[in-house]
Image (cartoon, rainbow, N blue to C red):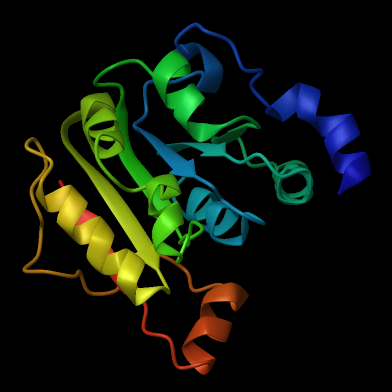
Length: 201
């Protein structure tokens, strides 16, 4: 992972800047762009990108091991529609993503910050949901999954209160079959934790 990062980051990583990314220039086409926030080790990211070559994917992650692993997979599998920004997601959203430029946000199993005093650190909450909404094209969506029930309830309330977003389902969403289940998710299921999924358009 370390050698992957050292050798491949200059090829497949987008440096943090305070300028909006030109997605057409970055990917060489005008295909829709999905931004995944906090991809972890990137297992699901890789599979989704490979199964959807007509969509472009930008993964945001700060931890080097996951970035290094996914860089290796991009190189090994010649994945042309996936790039990475290794930087704080909120700053990337504020500085690098233009309004109404993204077709979807994926937020899968981000840290739940279970202690009440840490709830303010949770990613999926207002006004951050408003920030996400403002980056979406018309008809775009936010798809979130968590194995922490209380965080799922919290995020559902926050998205429901986001004026420009509408729940595609009544309450929580069914599992979207195109989203692959990872080893992390399976461990949560085996431990008896329910997976809460949320899908807003």
